Length: 314
Image 1 (cartoon, rainbow, N blue to C red):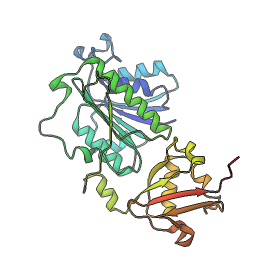
Image 2 (cartoon, helix red, strand yellow):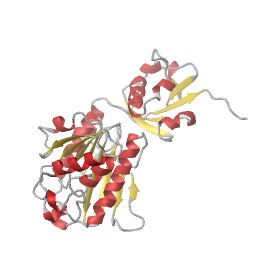
Image 3 (cartoon, rainbow, N blue to C red):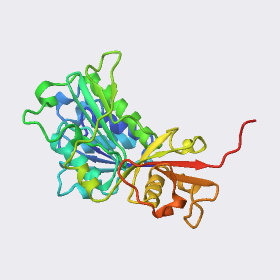
Image 4 (cartoon, rainbow, N blue to C red):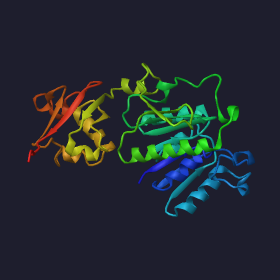
């Protein structure tokens, strides 16, 4: 079961944490604020008796009341670069539900550098969006928003409708559950008006050339490949026909594929690490056995096809 960090314990972070407590083994909470009376209309995890107390303390108590097996760590402090590794270091996934652009960009940069998946959520009024980045994806939060805007739109500035928090938070929990179960949700979810029938809308962001965060990762030799998964193995990839994985060689790509989709490499390679005799791997339509085998170099955007022997037609 995953260990998940939730940054922010307010209108979004609180309901998100309550939802994640049903399947996470450990939650790490980070928020410097104390509960205020004006919070209660949208921060349903708190009661009047919590006013004046640290949000992470109150939320941790509520979470343990829902799941006594859940481990909860609390940090009543803001997420800053100097302490990010202490707070996030042992987490498998990071969720941001703050109204702080500094926190959102820090979550992005820290996770991209370490290839850790994250979900960043935002809401203002009845508008919101969710940005998802899984391991080895080619775009990130900075690809969408290069830097914090000079005139920032926050809950404090424009307000937020209480029910909106619950709607966006529920969607975040669903997306995290999909990531944990090795599925591939869309990278960008837009809520132009949360209460519209066609909200949210799935969008596909492109990576920004020379992005400060993920471009540096690509320059350092990490090549992104698209792997075509045959039908018999798709149960290990959440039903996905294609997935992405990084690596400078085919062997590195397969290792990173195993990290994202446990059990997949064992269906492709034997105990010695060699490709099984009844499995063929093609890169750009060439059999790697006629190239450099698992040491075959991978270039950005290469397509790798896995072709196992199958019997059928009855």
